[in-house]
Amino acid sequence: MSGLDGLGWPNPEDEPKPTKSMNTDTPESDKAKIAFTSLFANDDAYWIPYTVGMRLERERDQWKANHDNQVALKAMLKERPDLGDKASRIADLIRELYEVRQERKNDWEKMHNLLNQADKRHQRARRQRDESREQRDRLSLA
Image (tube, rainbow, N blue to C red; front, side):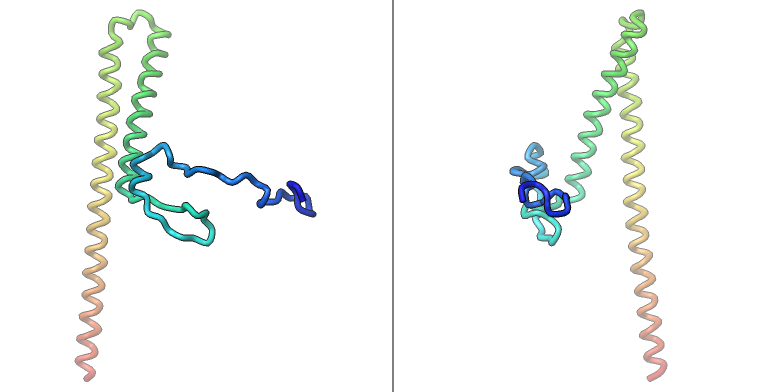
């Protein structure tokens, strides 16, 4: 059948197939990609390492914040033309605010990583304690 099956549902075989990968405009992620095979994924399924993804997201967030700051500054100057001579100072304050927020986010990520490391150490110590108890109990029974 041409687009619908017997029940009126679209036929997936008639759907257009994507011809290029989603990330063709991101050479860094394309370079870092690691292919995998999946029953549910198409032939070019892959993932990128966490560090590459986080760096790309951080760069995207910085660009977006800078763009949003410029839009906010232009809107403010449109509302209050008398602030035109102070525009550079306002832009500097907006940039400083963004940098402080970014530092806070980076500090939170560092703290989160340290907590994860501490949790892994704690789990490892518990596992070793339990194993040593089991070994001690086995030796006491023998």
